[in-house]
Image (cartoon, rainbow, N blue to C red):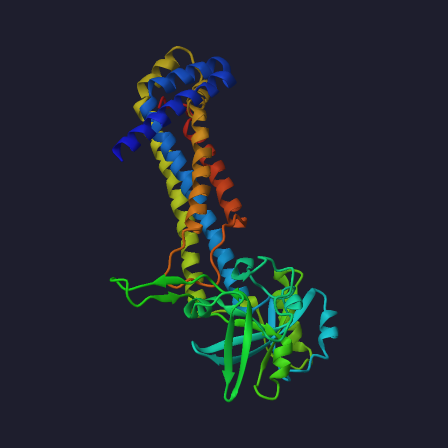
Length: 412
């Protein structure tokens, strides 16, 4: 480890030495003098370069992490609600109002889900009867939640009334796979269904310390069957019908939900995905707000640290500054000289941003948990990152430039 740190330090020193010629090539005589000064004080400038890389890297990593969490919270809400807007039907078979609903500005697609449950050897299984082709155009889902033989969602896996897309956790627990059959029962009725696909997160296999009591753990979800099967069960089982409404823009969800409340449709429990909340999502939102405040505060505290470090460096160089002033260098020339000494540190700032992105990417896909959730975080660079990284970069440059200014009456 110590050898690795020493090697990294050596590489960083060589990189700073190489990048120091930026000033010489871009600023002529002042640049050459700045380059020589940088070479004479390489360790000191290396410390500043590492600090700048750390500030930009931290700002990038944390701001991208905030965007990932914001995207994750939105996806969780969409998955919980089923789509942008959802509602329950008062009469499970009354869909006469759908053509009028489709004429509402902003409504893109609708799909019907019929919810019910049947028994299996694993216990009660929640089922959702859907018309798959229509459903996937209106519902929220992540492609990797489904598995089919052809690894494709282009063909309907529920084309017959004896097919099922089985919950993955149930399939793993029973040792079943695509192409096998599963028997479901209700009172004295039974149905043998062909497994045409799997749905849900991939469970983790957990065992005891001695390898005993193996158990699959994942967030409980549900299985899908075709609407034809629900039609056949209509006289046996009572369904709850849920309507999923896909919008042309997520931003319209609350407005459309409010508009549906005012219309005399045979629906109730109208929810936009922004209304979907739980204790977990509420706590996540609170921690996210605290995290955002912490990111902004710590970043600007770090920028203040750059100013303090530059002030300390100027104080250490007060004798050099007096000597250069006695030789006739103007204050503006001295300010430019000091600034062009730090210009070669810019590549370290860009390197810090790159490392921040790589770190955020790695953290996003390193999720570890006993029970795998249905929705996993996805790498996302959004508005918050853009609103923080660019201003932080600009603020650091402005701080460096301002701290290099030699004011009238002062030689440090």
